[in-house]
Structures are given as C-alpha cells and as structure tokens.
Image 1 (cartoon, rainbow, N blue to C red):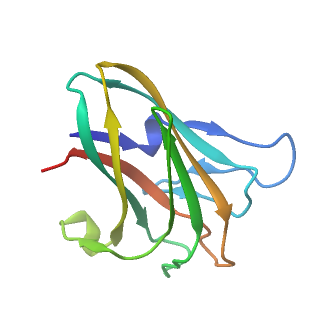
Image 2: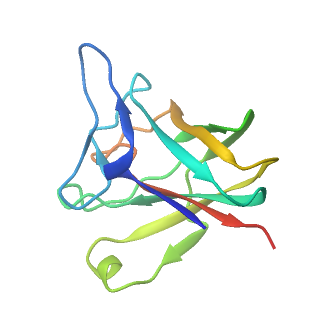
Length: 143
C-alpha cells in the first residue's frame, strides 16, 4: 500500500488569493478555490492495479464535514474524477476526535516500477466553512 499524507504533498498555490496549507490536525485547510492543488512524487516498487481512496476530514474550527466537491486525480497517464462522499468511515482512536471518511475513486494501473507524480485538483468546491479538507490519498493493491 502507498499512503500519501498532506505533510509530504507539494502545495500548488496561486500568486494571490486564498492559499491552502496543512492544518495542525493534518488535513488541508483553506481549500476554497480551484487555483489550489496538491501533488506527490511516489515510488512504485510493485506494478499492478491499485484501488485509490481520498481521505477527507473535519476541521477543528469548522466542526462540519461537507461532501459534493468535484475532484480530479491524475497519475501514470490515467485520470479519475469523483465527487467527494462518505464511501467509508475510518474508525481509529484519532478519528473519534477528528472524523475522517474515504471516497473511493476507482482503480489505476502501474505497468512498471518507477517514480510517478500524483496530482489532486478540485474542479468544483462546494461552499462550506472547511472547504475541501483532504487528509491523505491511499493506494492499495486491488484484489
């Protein structure tokens, strides 16, 4: 499995206007515009098919989760689009205080080992106090 967390993401921000940042609790905060986006450089050692999940959370200040944001994930020449939703609830000690949910995006295939860039962009962000609160991206080998 490959876990991509916000503290290791490259934050792509506009020259002016609202800029995203990693919050104290981990998720991205202040993501209210499409001009912001995230990317990660990842190393794939075992080629094959991987299930992609995007984890979103609740900001301590907002205390509310909002779905419906339309997003686009691109990696290895493949693009997946999905509206953020609660496909799965993450149940850990941490999520008792900072709830997190997985949005299942689908599958991507890595044909060979190597270094890839994964990009996550917003195509539409619903109005909400927390904005698009991405905590991580998970890639797990497909069964």
